[in-house]
Length: 195
Image (cartoon, rainbow, N blue to C red; front, top):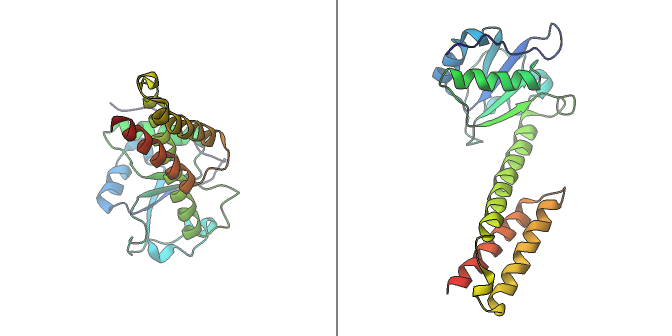
């Protein structure tokens, strides 16, 4: 299925560029062969570019390097707005391609950051969001447990752990350590019910 959509430009006359970290050349070539993406420049970036600012990153000349610091793949966008990002994702899907890594937009907030600082930040955010999803699923799954079927001395600690998990999700400043503690606590007390 071929889409008639194009990826929208962010600002008028701004070049659309996507730089990719830890993505192989064959995959990039497949992206470049998609007609709807022909006006986007695709470039690889490497560990050797980690000290470059986001502002300068998209203007780097083509070069080779290694990607060993981060195990995930990253796709950084410049000149593409939020609607364009959605269209890009849909176009990949229509062409039986996908990107399982982390997508990041160049913004006025992050342009002075180094690539290293940005990837550290989004890696932590991605880990937090993954754990938040796990915690939410755990809270939902715990609704299926009939706590009335167990003695109060076993359910009370679980109820406390569930409440702490719920309250943690209401907090705007989420910390990976606290989320992990909550997940582990709920799992522990759920398993304790079975003993």
